[in-house]
Image (cartoon, rainbow, N blue to C red):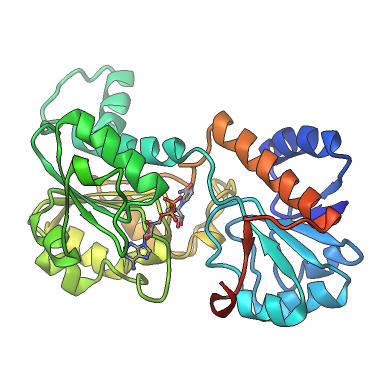
Length: 333
Ligand code: NAD
């Protein structure tokens, strides 16, 4: 099926093209992000393929439907950028990649914890400059520390398994318990997670109920010196609240792979430009903040799986076959 692929990078081509050729789909790769200006590029394509920061809002969806698009293949798990109600009204069907190497994201989250704790980012620079002093690089043993995991789905459960291996005490919060996590720690309230954890790692989706879950009030309930890790979605955290928490030393470490306003920054080389986002730039100045540019998913295993499932979703739609990866508006689930 002819499919317009938005937000294309070289690595998308590298993994999607072979999978598409095997299934006889014809992909047209477009570098721009999908938004109201770029939506006309999808004209006459029965399917489009979109990523995390493509804008699938009502106005864009209207354009797509008017141009003959019938299917949206998301090459990601999260779908907070898609107006599913409008898709349903317009007869646009949507499928995602619900699972692809949860290990990739969980390992990245744990990598952020270790790097922040043992200050790898600073040590790397020091040693390159011939500075072999270790003062200022003092860390703590992960063993015995309490880690609060918010969201114990596929990624949260892998994070739990890894951290249990380190000998951490685990607290879990989720709206539904995962039987795989029960033997590894204790389910408790979000309030207990906030007040008892040395490290809090977020693995729940971005929903109206979870938006700005890390707020001023939540930070005030946390232990002084807490480490917060977010590899899930940026808007789980109120960025201005964490900046205040960092300035007052209430937050001891912050590791982010996602950022509320990342759509204007992440995945692009802006090194020659003046970054206009003052909030982000303030965040990046703290010595105890480590930010990666939404790369937690970025392993060969994950990209192979994303490509395989995305192409399988296109094939299922073309053949009129049902797929468990299809997203329905809440009322239809
Ligand atoms: P999942 O659906 O397997 O797990 C999500 C868990 O969150 C579920 O157990 C669910 O019950 C729980 N949850 C739902 N509402 C909640 C609430 N209000 N409070 C607490 N928990 C709640 O999803 P997953 O595959 O583990 O992915 C988790 C998130 O990671 C995704 O939503 C996505 O935003 C993010 N993600 C990020 C990257 C990256 O590269 N940084 C890659 C993949 C996924």
